[in-house]
Image (cartoon, rainbow, N blue to C red; front, side, top):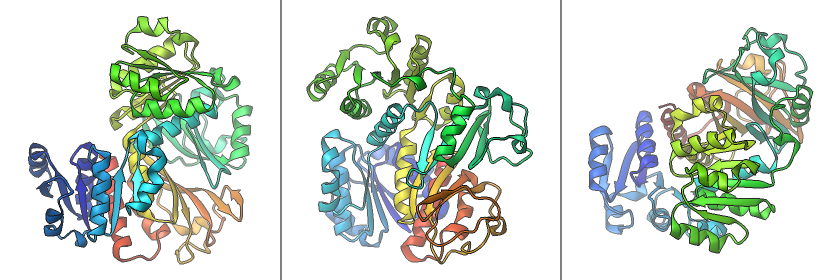
Length: 472
């Protein structure tokens, strides 16, 4: 497979780094010669000092021989033009990163008219996830599968102290619920019956949505939080960038009171013009006196979405200390994710995770319904539609021989959801919710991918490179 990456920033570099692990031929194009020189010293790639819209350079590159172009420059318009141009010149597939809020309503039109195969907007995706989290009043990680019939949550074992010291097989009241994974000191494992639950463990459950709700109510999970008993009405957002804007827009649509603290005066003016009902405060969001003056202790939620991880985390923890019930932080560094659960931050979201998830879903094609990345990308939850030509069709799960790091957590069939056991049989068109450690993702192919060739086969290799990227 041949892939062209236009934009040698953080995302572009990491994509290239991992593609090489699967013997994909990578070309990186950027206008910064110094960045390209550094990449040449570190990666075995072809680098081109150009802007990506020079037709003569693309033709000389023989762009029609490329399988994929990923435009991830810092300029949306450039990404749009690059994706459209390379497609017209013969590149098979194109992906563009478009982040400007001004384009949000036009994304579908842009995709169609400019012949772009896939568009990713990390900031919009994060804002949507945060608003979903707040509006549904979750106090936990939650994701829905099988058209909303299956849920996955996580919670601290400390919230259910009667589980501490017990083996998984000793636990009761788990009807239509499966323990998919356990995080021990930031390391994710797939448990077996004799696995012992210890203090500070984080438990990941997957099950029928109604049963998950009953489990939460029965064990009074999150009883130390009062948010579950009252709706979110007031949200304090630190950072008025793209994420802050997208989030405020969605919360205001739900009649939630929004305060945004932003230090840049021009940005404050922009936000004031665009967000009529939000209170925009132009000031230093790390100034505790300012936060107290603005009544942060009376807010229902605090969301840190500045461009600095440390600032987001520090101020989230301060907000929690000052009495805010729910605190959320944007974290870009993967190595921070594993410690978030110990700091008291309710949820941390990584824009790179969001981008990779979206790209993976596109690359895998129509049979992959969704992709979720967990705990610093140590694991994935995938929802896959089972093709009739898969080797697993007609076999009970216990006879399939899945690797230890892979489990089928749920099955959707004919509008109903099932939590399977070893005797459950897989049928064509079943929607399979698969929990998989990142180290075992490559092993999914012979079980769930089916017979493939050509570009699709190459894209599978591309996917493998992404997973190496995530693990590194």
